[in-house]
Image (tube, rainbow, N blue to C red; front, side, top):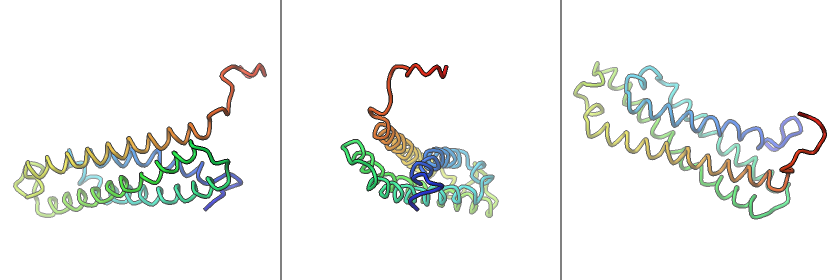
Length: 170
């Protein structure tokens, strides 16, 4: 996908990534910290993570097309490099979302609540899962911020005046 309605698809697809990565990370953290929420979210959690995972290579692919159609400079190259590093973070979100969904479903099927005696609800397992999830979720959100910030700098450097143009559009 390179163009959508005459605009570079990357410019449109990037908005999905910017919204879905933090949303998926937040849902995952809530689900791992509060198992009842993971049970309520059900299959929506891994489906959200899957949509997020699919959106990243679509966006980077469209970005590679766009990179070939703009003047190359260090800011564009830096943005592309950072963008290539997002997929492993989002892949981690997906894997963890599947694990949390599976564990929550298994606990519900066995009739074990959040304070029950299943392996998933054991304190060391839950703490390890929470720490891993917080690390991956934080890494994904920070990385999507870094990628977006570098993209904005690449797109807007020297592209506007810091003073009003005087056209009266107040």
